[in-house]
Length: 404
Image (cartoon, rainbow, N blue to C red; front, side, top):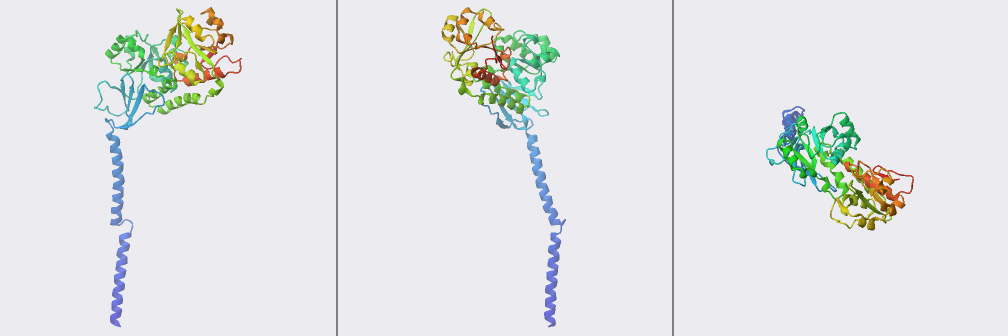
């Protein structure tokens, strides 16, 4: 009996010691727990360091991320890279690398790539449509010089800045005042394709080490593609969201149109120069496409349907093809400027035979038309409103005015 008692006591002692050891191992703050916690913290810390290292490794390197999605524009592209770098390309082969503030310039870039350290400011802009797009995204304060004088502008914000001497006129794009340009010393400039007709100016800009690109929106056949160039400037100024907002608003004007009410109404669009030459829009011109989107039928749609711009036409041929058009859209130009219907009729007495004149459907674009690209969707809506107008007392829209 005594022996059994001793065996039982020994067994109980072993059980008690085992429980004590297990309890000790599971106490918070024990060596085992601390080792697990330390390992977890090291893993989190290592992950954070890896992320930080990844971000730091983008400095000075071009690691492709994605490209800008475009719906209509074909004459430019924007590629985005890790770390905030961007490469903007235009269809003439120009490339601009934007370098985020505080980041290094990558070493492996081509010799012809324009490098712009952000934020870009103090720009020279020699393109009125470009100025309209820059204005639309609230970045006009980045521009300090232009090649259009104060009295040539029809964009109020620009006139106001020129009155305050916040934007200076540096002379015509054909013969700018290089002394003024040198005084401002812009780090970047934007011209239109018309600069190609004055190679001496392009050469002088290179001599002054003022890099530039050409706004090639005029190469775009679709009118909304010209609006979509706002996304290039959104990328340039790091305000992509605002640029998207501007574009989507103009797109909505077009997608929400009711073209069924137009009923195949015909339209002719033209202007007459100060020397008396008559010019009509080509069948492939963006204005012809605008009218098509508005639901109208362009009288000269079959004339050079693959070309943009205008075509000179003798009045006799014009008369035979356009006299029965339902509407006339006279394109305001430097040689035109008809203030009323009598001014328009004075250009040729045969205009009195035109159906559109007899019906009171002679309209004229507003003077700002060729200076704007940011509201072309609104212009298309104006065309649709003109074609569906039932109230004869309405004489004006945002970009169209009836000649009376």
